[in-house]
Image (cartoon, rainbow, N blue to C red; front, side):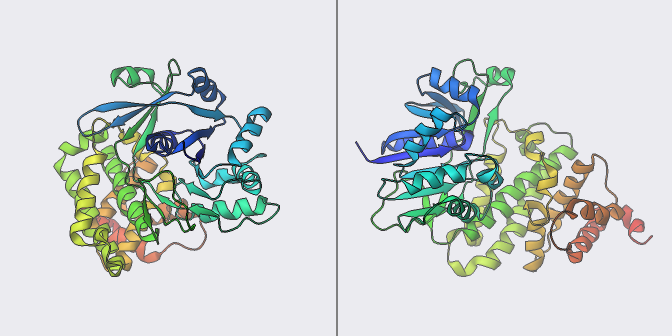
Length: 412
């Protein structure tokens, strides 16, 4: 037996198919505990004796992994909350995997409050807290919230870690789709299935707690995660969204269909390697990291383009394109990548093609060159600061280059 105990907040596909799955596979944990406020899901896992299924998509099929012996508690229930706090008091590894960092302090008995109470009374020799939300500063935000909830400070035996998670995943909720794809439901009869890709090369902030070895051993530690977080946002996330918006323009429904469209794949590959990659390499070549070399980034792009269109993952264009307002934020994947390229002296022509397709998806109609500035004003009106006029002019310029017939609109 070991003395590692894992507690995870949120029971979605990343928590279940990555953190809990890796904790279980390691054999290093005495207990694995989940905090989840969906009572139906809590009841289903309990009724199945703490056992659930994850469907794992590889390049040639789907395999099913069963995780056993999980304890699951709803922190909104007083009895469950007490049991969860008892677990947090001895947890060596904690992971938050929530929809966003906004969920850290959204209600009474919040995640930050519960973690604070657990750390205040902790009997563990050390505790690391992984943050799996899609935010470059999630660990710092959670630590600040936890400290604000703490009665007294906790010391160097606690560390909050950022993560870079390039693992694609989803919850399949359509029962017909579950049957058609022969997926195993999370538990019998619940009508939901976790589907994740077979990928566990996850980057995390380097553990700095002396004499402490994490129970999950497969993660790759980095002193500075920010460059890799930018590669995830401006590479992986940007090109995934670009593919979806270009696919939507042509009426495709499945991401796997795009693999057979040479025009879309060529735009995506040039955007990935010659624009996103070239800009990131110029910015981070001094780090002497393999990723930020021409060969390293090309391998990264080729691998991801194949994974993004994996038919076994069953990703849809609609799912990959959803929430365009967030994805079209000034510093998010689409326009953030264009701005990065501009800053590094790279022409982002292919990224702009994706941005224009995204604007068409957002408005559900064709976009003219004179629409660009008012559309960006509309999208960014709630964001701090003013939008970059150079970025707007870049979009106009490349719109005209891509649509010569529209040149007259620019000069009206």
